[in-house]
Length: 490
Image 1 (cartoon, rainbow, N blue to C red):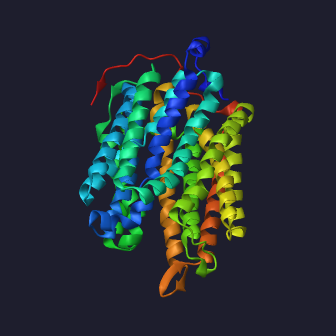
Image 2 (cartoon, rainbow, N blue to C red):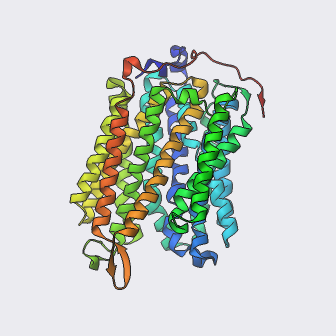
Image 3 (cartoon, rainbow, N blue to C red):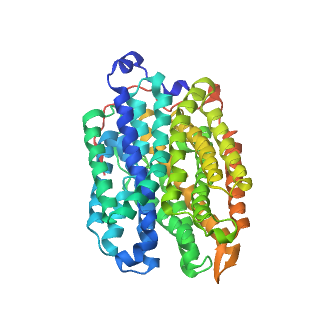
């Protein structure tokens, strides 16, 4: 493990009681938040009828969460560095609970979109949790703890689909959101009881202009990517938003470079270790989301197509659920490799495993057990990469910047998944076969998407090769000593 991850008062840190409880509580909070990713998937086809709205409008119940998460993650991460990571963790969980309650009472489109946006604002829980671990967990346990916390993203997503499908099949759909609200309350109470506040504070003035600029640029970019297929890739709306995203983000970058206390320290982000870790994260985010698009469709398409398996949404969830447990197991293995060889090696191994999983899927896609095997292999690779990326980021930044730096890395993965959705959507829409008068994605279309997923994982492997080795890893910009919080100004 990089020395940059160690804190100076090792004896004091090791003496703190309850570090295992802190890890468990933060991992639970991460699982609860990641459940929001798959919570509405089983009811998406029914939303137009449930909310009495066109399908093009009900799609915003998914898009709103994506946009809110992209906006909130870097902003909340920076605020966590400034005024307290635990404090912002509590705020994030409260937003999740509030959004869940709003959706639980919703019977029309607008409150559903508002509630889903509030749920999306809680997305910073995982990067905040990783940053808290750096400040509270003994140095010798940090690699394993970080890997477990990172794996909670995949575990929640994997468990959420079968659980949500089961609830939607047996009870009123509002129960989905009452359940998520109850889980949020449990997570909140445990955080308040067991998670201490970090003593590392950046203080200073909050970059309001930078936060507004980044938010506007991300919204324009993600709308372009996620809605381009619906609006038409050459439509005035899509092209206009794409151009606006480029211009806004360019202006934002210039502002951040000149700001005395920027929202995102672009100079730190440009360090070799941070830069190539983030670039690899985009590629891995792209690769990992391709599986989420391919496997459910293969399982649900009619058997008469010759390649579909004709299974229910509940079966889809059960096929994907083992992936979450594999990720959790592999997170412990990845921590051992990180300690022995460094997080760069762990990241590269994980990327190769993900690529191997997609390659396997091209050959094995005709039986349910084939897809269980493929999802587990890819999940193993994801478990390696999720544990390595935060370690690489924290090994290159000061403790007072870990919230913002980890949040930016999480955002990079989210951007990768958005690009994957757009690219795979184009491939599946263009390569079709006729089935009873309906155009369905062809078998070759799925194989092309899987090949692209494997290629993205190999790109991540290539990019990770530029990350400095253990002996040349970038050191933090400042000493690890405790900083008292300076007054925060807006």
